[in-house]
Length: 262
Image (cartoon, rainbow, N blue to C red; front, side, top):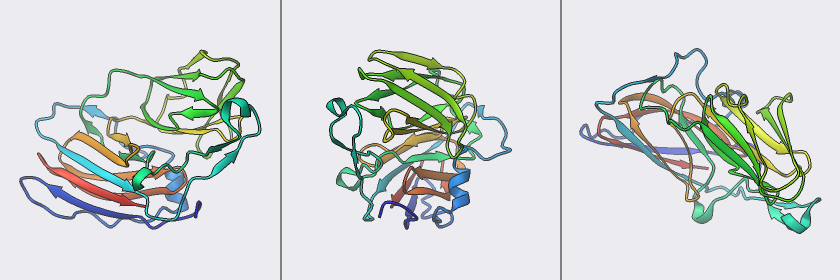
């Protein structure tokens, strides 16, 4: 199965001085309105993020596992097959040894905590007719460098996810080209990238106004550190398998462990 809802299970334990066990409400499957709302990376109406001195904090660690029958598909290349290959993996579902890659995890109501990163320059590269990275999280207000490593024509189109209007189109006709964009990361949302000349090319950029986000690694692992103690709404998103929302508790000096199963 490659589309539709999938059952998603969370197991949460908190380790620390208080020794608390499972916490929060049970995870719920993504519905159409949940997925639509996930285009925005923080809840509407929240106060601006505030950097504070952290006198105590906790940590969130987790694994995302693929346990369903969902699998990646092969794409038939219709242009520049000499560079891209005749058939290539789509790249939507990457789960070596069962760990699911490219799942975005974030705390949607994190309004204060550690310092925002100083670097605000991000990049995405057309490489062998695909975008690298395919999924990433960035900080609002940064510059996005669109790069090409291919000696062919790319027309990278950037939209707000779920919206047909085009924000930017970047045309490149050779390797080594870099086009900086300073406006597309101006507000918290999810961007969808595609290529007019290579229609199988896709990518996503989640723009956050806080530092409490992460994208799961190739083995499915993710870590968020320096979180002020408290209760949070944790959200996850995968381009094909959907999104989820649940409540978690972070204890001072503790580790909240989460297992996500698709």
